[in-house]
Image (cartoon, rainbow, N blue to C red; front, side, top):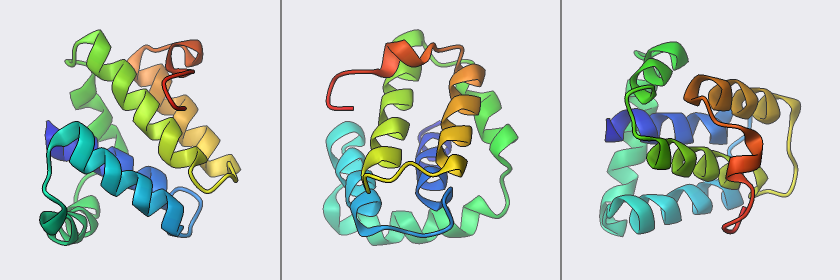
Length: 117
């Protein structure tokens, strides 16, 4: 399940077609703070997600999230929004990915507002 969550978060970085340093830094912070991934492992994690991402569709990853408890789904939505807003430029693709993901997670956008987002 962790891999699917990380993959979805990584896809948010790629949603606007460019990897922005602020988005990547936010992703790395989430990996260490929320998932306990050591900083020295992040390069390998990102490389793995780049490779694995081509083999897994967004729909496949999203289907896994329907089994998560509500608090974890809300936290995932918050992380996605945080990455999307990290570069202070929400693209149409980022908004679309976030909206579609929140629908699949059965979360109202109002539930992810706050807590640093």
